[in-house]
Length: 240
Image 1: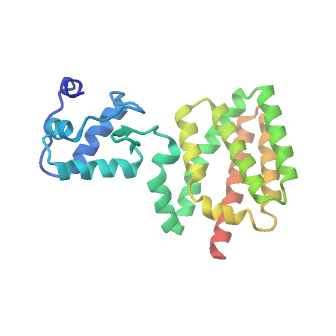
Image 2: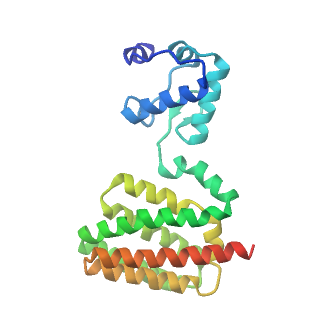
């Protein structure tokens, strides 16, 4: 592993903001593909030598990478590059949202930017079999209209299917991560009267647009759906 790192011609890190620069160096290795999900990092001693940093500085950087969801430790020892799942990488943002209720509006603005484009792409390439899956999910949701837990499970599947159909892996991962943010507040919202019937009606409108393969109509239906979710989420927060 030391020879591998040496082959990358990494320059020693300047003393200013050392831990942050170690983080950025490792992030660069991940982004370039030199480090991939599941790869084990070299020992602390090797990393200290390559980056010319002290043990405390290195450990500070590794802790930061762990918090960001970039690395994880495994039973038996060793630090590995994580699976880099969107939900894990967005966990720090999820924490931010949990302590900043005002950011709910910002989160839904991001969701509209992502998911309206996502559903537009899905409308252009959705298959008959996938439309059947959507109809099946709608049927499940109608049966679960008085069961918030069952509805939330089917709702997640609904949005996951949309993301997968879009055909853009990065967009799908981002949308999945954003879906999970502020889940506690949305969970409370699903307990409120009238929220589930409205969501089901929104889903039906989205699916009808997909059946017409109308990207504009699908995007508008998703925007209306997200507006409704945002309003119910803010209402749920105001009641806590």
